[in-house]
Length: 197
Image (tube, rainbow, N blue to C red; front, side):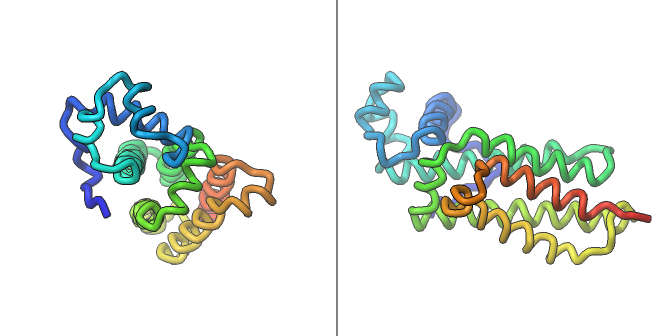
């Protein structure tokens, strides 16, 4: 398991363009169908440069994926840190993940789900996002903007829903993309919380 703090950039500054390029490839294609040789050729770099980031293709995929998810957490907090109404701040917080999900193709989602370490990374990411959501819900309740729901219950409903909608069988039978499903969850949670008083 790659233990990286989401508040710190991954790798040396010189590696950031390489990591950005790898992220674009992995989000679009996953990692199983690509080889380190093809990655080096496409990125115009040496094996040595790739091996400086990670020693195996799987480790490279996991490192790049964790960096992608950590950025969602940082950007979500940045977008929700405003003087807007709490309902709008929650929308901004959730929209970051929804927008990011539009960049992920089915092969990436399948590869994350099929790797035990990938599931750990994704589930830890969701737990962190839910903790943030619970904090915003609690603030909204304190300020009287939200109904008095139990914030942990809201958080658990959210994480359970997200885990479910990322499963291929749900997406196939619901005729939704992952990003569309996340948008629906966001709308459901936001509209359900607002105080009617």
